[in-house]
Amino acid sequence: MGNPQHYSIELPGRCLALINGLWPKASKLHGGESPELGPLTSTFLISMSMPILTIPLERVERQIGKAEDQAYADDRHLGTKAAEEFVDVIRKGKLGATPFYKDGTWRFVCVREKPFPNIANGLPDELAAALSSVEAEIAARDMPASQWVSILRNAMAHGGIAYLDQNGRSSYGTPMKMFAFVSGKYARPKCEHAEADCRFGMGKLEGLNILRISETDYRQFLEAWVAWLATTKITKMSAA
Image (cartoon, rainbow, N blue to C red; front, side, top):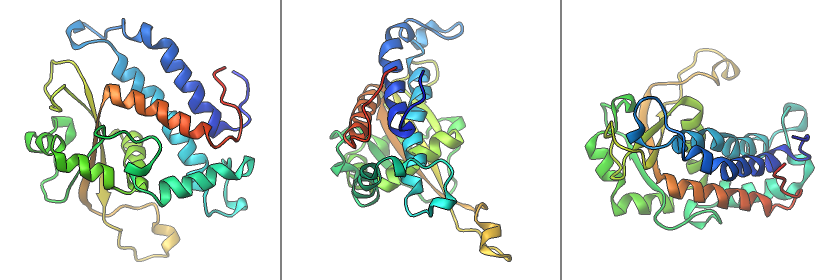
């Protein structure tokens, strides 16, 4: 693979090309001794989607507002339109107004009452039901796009991903059909020292933000996301 001219724009296209090119192979692979659980497409899709989502966020969106001498992985200087797009679409807009949103695909529920569930034990039935509601669909459509990307980013960074069945349930021993992305909401930590000494600390867990989407819709979303990145026209998309 040649060195990308614009890493945050070209790498997602390359990862998407790998998904599409290797999908037939992944669909024939099964893990362990449980072929009834289906092929390893979900694991493949999540693994390949991480750089598709996080690299543009880290190298463009997260750099917005920083002084040049405070950034070390910053693609903004390679073209101003990407930064402008992230401001207009992500920082100022709602998920339902983004070019990569499709009606009914995303569901959103926030949990603010303790005890908070541990997704390692599966998604509680009441949360699964809430995520299947019309209210959850509306909540996702109307949520700030900045909150949406923050949940995805944090879920991927901290392992907050759950596999769900076709009914949106954590039914072990059945094929996976949906993803749940779970991100914790923490209180601002109380600090007795300078702000700079405490910025990496976290307070108590105050709630959970949960996004749900089917595997099929997630793959289609990645196509739309990469297509949106391409519209920044910073460089030609490469599948090398």
